[in-house]
Image (cartoon, rainbow, N blue to C red; front, side, top):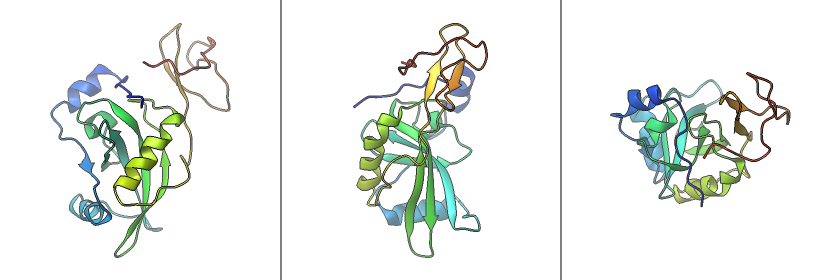
Length: 169
């Protein structure tokens, strides 16, 4: 299993260094309690979107959507990271959708099996895959982080060609 190290700005790493790691989701009941304790409010459709990581031990950790993935991970490498959408009912919660949208770790879509396993370990059924797959590349010319859109591997900052393979190690 591939571990992803933080690749984001140092100033973010410095700012979140003292923040406690995200909540470890070990059961649906515990997740419901976190939603209540953390004052996560569902939108009109019953959805709560949260920041998530899968830590090196395969545990799903969540934090408020406005949190940095690095803080949620307690500053550690992760097996995956992104956003997770929960469908929250009065007495139950389900995983509605998951993405790998994290510019702090830039995990590959291939990290899905670790996410599915972590969701299962938390006692929740996992969707079939990422709702949206994000591809990230670092420009070898200007070093900008790029989100690949429409399969165009060209740097948004300097127009240099980007590599086909993930290069954020």
